[in-house]
Length: 187
Ligand code: GRF
Image (tube, rainbow, N blue to C red):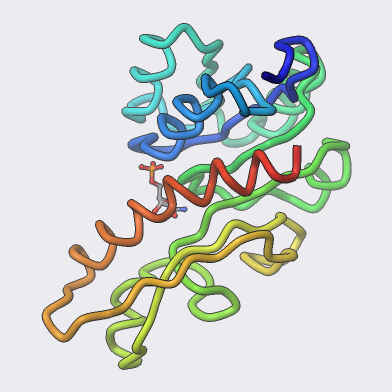
């Protein structure tokens, strides 16, 4: 059992549904978890993940002021003594200034087998390219989009009948497993 006060304090940035946030939080309650979710920041005031965070009594802040997002987020991270930052469906590119000044590792979950299909619309692009496999990747964030060091990946077979939606569903199930696993391993 990992002692509560030795657990890493994790912040999660979201913009939408928050299913990865939910799975990270569920994992954090397990005996072998080395982290707790101490802070959630959303850049969208209607993100569904906010409802989950509030219901589960996780400190949750909305910063929908684009101009000051990074300044306010940096302050909250310092104030809450956060050790690690996870981007989970966070649809905003963080500046080099933020990445340099936050002083803690940042990791992201991306729905493709990086380095293939960086950016958006990954599932349709993988289908159009007639890839045999797609999948998901947990990686460190650096100042180039979806380009930081890879921590963990999971392959998913693309079937002939797959659409972008069915592929997204299959891949999300794997995202939920590898994100917690990767986070716990680096804690
Ligand atoms: C996930 O598919 C993730 O790979 C991508 O954004 C999506 C977020 O989903 N970066 P959710 O908000 O965690 O449900």
